[in-house]
Length: 279
Image (tube, rainbow, N blue to C red):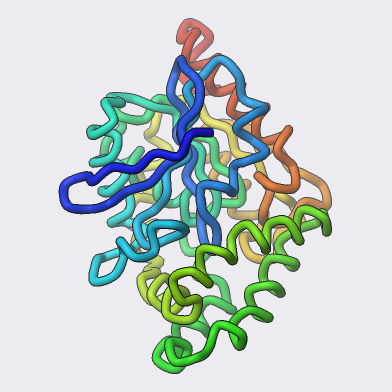
């Protein structure tokens, strides 16, 4: 994928871009970056695939300083970026926090969202998870720690979230590089301090009214986002839950085929509307 950057309004934004056709925008979570989707994107064909980086995350950590980087605000940043790159309507695929961003944008501006793919996403009152709440509680002290003190916790989080050990090791190297470049402790403290469960609760009652093609894919052994929330999202979006037995949290890295299949299903439903409003 080609890395691209632009200043949207006054905010530097980064994304990865590849292909032509119906646009699919992939949105990552924490503690990852657009590279989360590196194994999914090559498996999705016949579409323009764009992996957008949330402000204050990944290579855009510096852009988040002194800015609101809450999930609700990220939906506004995403909408502004969509306008900037000339996308009036796109399929959104979201993981973790990125799934919350996708839900909020779909609820606020349904005309911009052609379809939804959610995988091990935050939603309702499912977040922040206990380890993140603890980091948020001690964010003041966390900011003062050297990177070497933060790294073991980062590694533990990534390992707990993968069922494929090789992909876990690859993921740690892929995503840690952004933190160590920008100051891991300060960056993580800023990210977790911005989390507010009211962001997804505010749009929860609007999800059942979204009449769009959707797929929900879940690692059923996820310790961070329980599968019961995946079941609820699938019900509200009018689709079946695709459970990955033994799958954990970072499904786009461990199970890219399943996520790519879900994206392909939604793309076909978008491109063939006679098949029905929901997938």
